Image 1 (cartoon, rainbow, N blue to C red):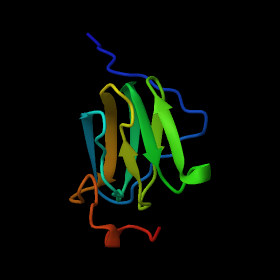
Image 2: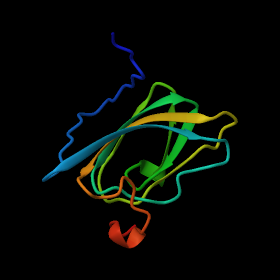
Image 3: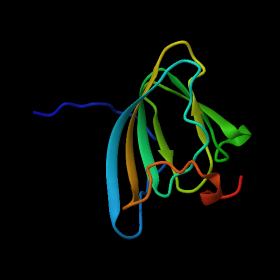
Image 4: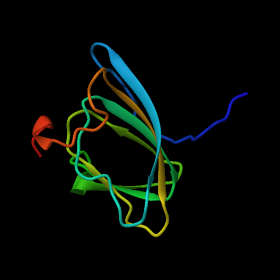
Length: 118
């Protein structure tokens, strides 16, 4: 039996690569209205699907520094840049997230001195 948990579209090519031993983690993350992830970075890469809601993503990779993702969209986050996600809507945001991170590193780095300068 197979249960599809989520599916998202990505217009660009996706290349996920982590040197050395790697950990892979999969999480369902719920962000309530008005809440967010806080500023952080990752030592590896993430691929996520917005299962529900509208997710506002602040990152230097976007023109203007912000992009809003909707249910059914996919997100690819690269390594080391500071970013933050917020739920600025009125319903919960639910993300299905796969982390591909060097073994032993935290899934999210909140000590911004370990991230690339903004």
